[in-house]
Every structure is written in structure tokens, then in C-alpha cells.
Length: 255
Length: 255
Image 1 (tube, chains in turn blue, purple):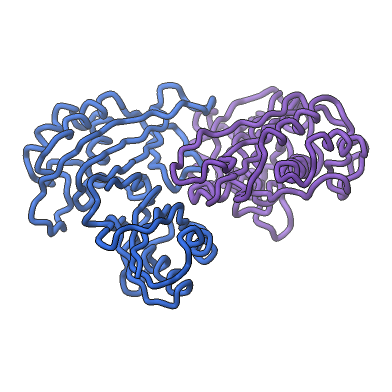
Image 2: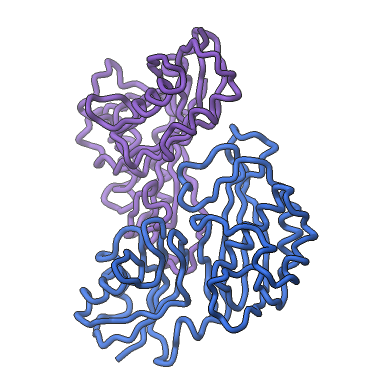
């Protein structure tokens, strides 16, 4: 038996999230079906963590135990031939038997992308949240920086969370602006920008609630200075709405 | 009556090309239906030129005559509300009555994108032609440069062409490589690169046949020096196959 680790990229648009659910179309089901076809085994995969419906992954990490003799170098091509075109395995390696994609994850990076141009980009419409009215990105960035460090993130966590502790550490938080390439957009618009958050763990809906709160700050509905008070309130009702799922991408997982 | 010019961006994946055809789903039909709904007029649009099924446009140019009193600044928002999400109007302006999007076009730029990585990019799968085996991009670039200038492009033109003359001028031809951002790809792979062609006019399937020929050169099936002989042969059978439509984007039109 071997423990194999895979880097998987997926466009979450057509799926009910990563995790297997009865009668739902999920990414886990697609991968497990492909593995069953390839190996003849009933394989259960472990991921670094679930992603919600319509959320994407650039580099999700999964692992599974298999008795299959297929050489490591052949796995990628073999499984990609079976997988649908919106799920692609980018890399495969053999790892020690004790490696566990969820338990071993040291930190994760998520990206939330906002298109602040007047009109949407047709080619990125499934991965960018389109916000056509004015956003003050500098204020959003100022507010975002308040989140760096170890905090109780109850204010930025879905009330459905069943976690005992809401204390998490954000190691890095930044906004990266794309170069404006569309000559037809109004110059006062915010352009396309990405919110990156790296931390040791993220609560249910945490990145989307942070994005939703930052959007309210960008709109001027909330002041950047309020971010600290929202965090300290430890109360979901203080934060903004949960931003749309499709702007979110699981960017990277570190072990 | 006014003559309005629009910059239109579309993801051609779901369409039978730009030009209206009986019983087919076309971009022209979608735009004309939206204009009819908006103005109550039966409007016929003129484009800079048709694009084939599954070919995209970053900035297609169209114009049409209308008696509608809607102010220019309101057109974009109004029509985008009606159009499907894979067609977006980026800019609208009033132009002199004699402006004609096809006849007035001085030059056009097309982009053909190849993903030469081992595995496809799920997020760009509708706009990148995936070529997982080795390509010598330097040789492709060398061959591409032979096409610059005024030539008879019969070798790079579909036999279905009904044009009287196949003489066209290519003003600029270049390959632009994307920065490799995927750490999981094999370093000997070609990465993602874009073939840009700018000229005073393009024949039926011309860019796709040029791309198909360059791919054969990149694969080593043809030598870069053969490009000149293929061009001089003025015979379609000398060139490579017509590359897949989905890698092609109408990039820019100049007037």
C-alpha cells in the first residue's frame, strides 16, 4: 500500500462544493469515481479542507491510500483522461504513510477576486465578483491589515460553525491590483484586484465574510477603522454580508 | 437617426460564430435581439468581420443606425442588463453617419493562445489550445517572422474562400510568453504563450492555419525555414492543419 498526494485544480462553477454529499455533484465524488475506474479499488480521499459550492481551487491538496501498482509519473495523465475538463490533477507524488492532507496542513492561502470595472470581464466571469460601482481599495487594504495576527474570528464566521474555538492566526493579508489593460473602462473605477489571506486555518465562510465586510468599507458604508471593532465584538452581526462564492479560490496549502 | 459604435467582448464557447444564421445561436442574433428589446426598432448591426464558432473577441467593433433617444452614456448598462453573461458591451460612442465597422477597419489583431504545459489550466480551458507535448517556441517565432509583409496568403487560407485576391499585409507578428506561474509543471515544457498577428485583413481560417503550421514547426514535423516555401507555394496543401477554434481571440480592430 502507498500514500499518494495530488495537487488538484478545479473550476468549482458546476459543483456543489468539494465534499461528497448524497445526490449532489461534488468534486470529491468525481475524483473518487476516477480513482475507482483507474484502480478498481474503492478509494476515499482526504483533502486539505472542503470548499463551498462554486468556490474554486488553484492547488487543492488531497491524499489517499492505494494498492495500485501504477507508477507515480503515470498517475497525472491517467486520471486527467478520466476526470471532467473542469478538474485537473497538476502533480502527483508518493508521501509517507502518515501524511494526512487535512491534519498536516500548516497554512492555507485563499484569494478573493473583485472586478471593480464598470463592466464585467466575460472571460473571468466565473472567478471574479463584479462590483461596478466605486470602491476605495486603499481603505479596504487598511482595514484588511487589522486582521493580521492571532484573533478570535467569531465576527467573521458563519453562525453555522460548530468549531469549539474561533481563534485563528492570519500571517499575511494583502491586496494585489492587476494592471489595468482595458482601455475602455472608466479610469475612476477600481479595476481588478485580489485579496490574499494566508493563515493557519479558516472558519466556515471566513474569507467570504471578510471580503463582504471589506466591500462595505470600500463602498464607504463602513469606515476602515471599524474593522478592529468588528473583530473585537466577536459577533457575526457586526461584520458585512458573506460575499458571493464564485470570487473565491483556494490558492495554496503549505505543509 | 444616429450611428452608434460599440466595443463588444464575448466568450464564443456557446455560439455558432458571430454572424447570424438561420436556426443557429449566434452573437449577432443576441445583440440584435437585445437592441430590439431596448429600442423597439428592428436593428441590423455591422461588425468589423465575422468570427467562427467558439472563437472569442476581446474587442469586436460593431455599429448600427438607430432613432432611439437613449443617451450614449446609458447604452452600455442598459444593453448589458439584457445580454447573456458571455457577451458584454465595453464601450459605446456616437460616430459620423458614414462610419462602417467593416469597411472602415484599417487593421486587426488576432491572438492565438497555446498552453504548452503538461496539464491544462482549468480556468482558461475555453480560450487556450492545450498542447501537452514538447514545442520549440523559438523555432515557431522564427517561422512566424517570415509572414511579416505583403504576401499572397493562399497557402494559409481555407479552400472555401471566395475572395478574389489573397494578398494581405501582416504588419506585426510576435509570440508573447506568459510568466510561468505553476510550480508543478515540468520545466522543459513550453508554458503558455500567445501568437499575435496584426494585419490589414485576414482570410478565412488564416490565423488558425498559421497557428496549425507553427505547431507542426514547434513539434519538429516541419522546419522553420519551410515557412517561406509554404507561403511561396500559394497552395493550401503545403501548410499545416487548421488549429482548434477555441484558442483564437479577435484582439483589437483599428480605424
